[in-house]
Amino acid sequence: MEWKPDKSSQIPVYIQISDYFETRIMNGEYPAGSSLPSERTLAALLDLNRSTIISAYDQLNSLGLVKRVKGFGTIVTLSTSAEGHVKRVPNWEEYVKSGFLQLNDPITRTIHKIVGSDKPYINFAIGELSADLFPVTLMQEAHSQLELSQYLGYEHIQGNLKLRESIANHLNRYRNIESSSSSILVTSGAQQALQLIIQCLLKPGDSVAIEDPSYSFSLPIFHSAGLRTFRLPVGEEGIDPEQIVSLYKQHKIKMVFVNPIFHNPTGTTLAYNRRKRLLDISTKYGIAIVEDDPYSLTSFNQEPMSTLKSMDQDGSVLYISSLSKIVSSGLRIGWMTGPQAVIQRLTDAKQQLDFGHSNIPQWIAAQLLSSGELDNHLMQLRVGLQKKLQLTMNALRTELGDKVRFHIPSGGIHLWCELQGDWDELQMFNLAIDKGVVFTPGSTLGSQSRHVRLTYSKVDDLLIGQGIQRFAEAYLQCRDEKNSR
Image (cartoon, rainbow, N blue to C red; front, side, top):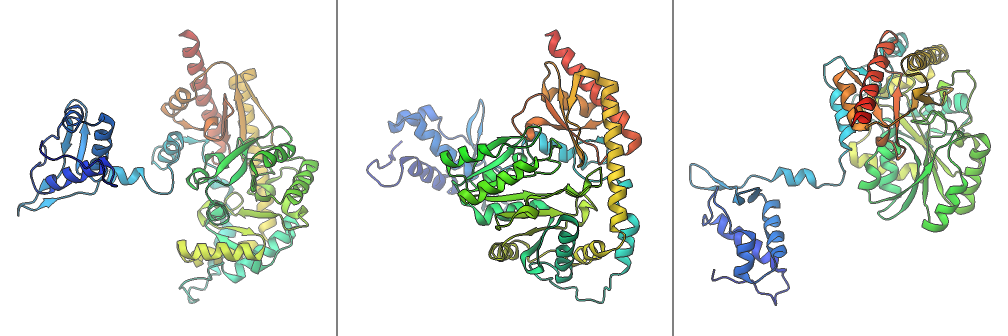
């Protein structure tokens, strides 16, 4: 081999080698299907470390020029058209490995694939309402009042004004939160609000605290944004705010993400004195709080719950909620309220992302929130959810007895279960799928072992017992197989 890389050049040697072979591949000297010299052979010819050759071939692979085939070496992948032109197909495998957003974990991807199929799985995995809990009449009335002769172009980026006014009235009446239309941003569900906060108010390397376990743990957006996440264990009274002080002193925590009322997944509620202490810590150290509140209106005893935002006298809390868990996830109506400077910053970002939310769902949501029948729906929703919870707990006690432990929530849609004994999470997950039931393994939501989340709100009442029976069969089979090894 006559060519040699210039080791004195500022261009890295592996790039020089990659450029050399790219030119010859494009010239046809190495046609499709041919092999490049082996890594060991080329390293000897060029008097280089093999690692340098591997880096060069990896570069060629990323450019879509070659592929690494075990047992055959590095194979040229370019093809030639009928006219004799070299065709260079984009290396899509490399593209999908790149990009800003990280993938969901494999179990979460499997769950979404399963629930999106047309097979009749009993679904304890996804946090949405079952058909019998939808306010069908209320939705029909709201839809019938639509005037499609209204403007059907782009809506206000911050959200339809009537909807924002309805949200402000709703927050004041149901959640004791003082707000105004100018300090509210309508989002595509609560998750978009979280994404906007992470992308616009934080930067790579910033430290944030999240609950453990938590829904936030399951979101790749935290690590995609390069944030350093620190966990706050959730006990029977929620997180211990004093741990935030320690984290701040060690890592300069900038923001805390909490779901204090009927927490996902544990169902616990942050004790009132802890809520007060969390706010005190926030104002003492200048730590922003993001409160995600999907469930506070689902209290089974019908009593109003004090959100952090309703107790916030200093503007420390960014408050997020939505209609997904109380009306319909399909509307994709969420909102955030906070300081106007923050709302304007995130509104600008939303304009860049989607140019504002669809106007028809916003009109429907405005009608729903201002309807005099909303109270009746919420009462029926609480009764329906409590019934589903009771059916789920009864079935668990019947099928598993003292082999399962759980905290009994007083609202919300999730039951956090600890299964006794030695069992393999992934094996049990797959066994349950084979039996036609799907649930959320605890590892997808945090670090606690031997836990699962059963979301009872989605399952038809008549299928809950059958679903828990299949779930129990998967667990017992998994445990027996583990113990027999």
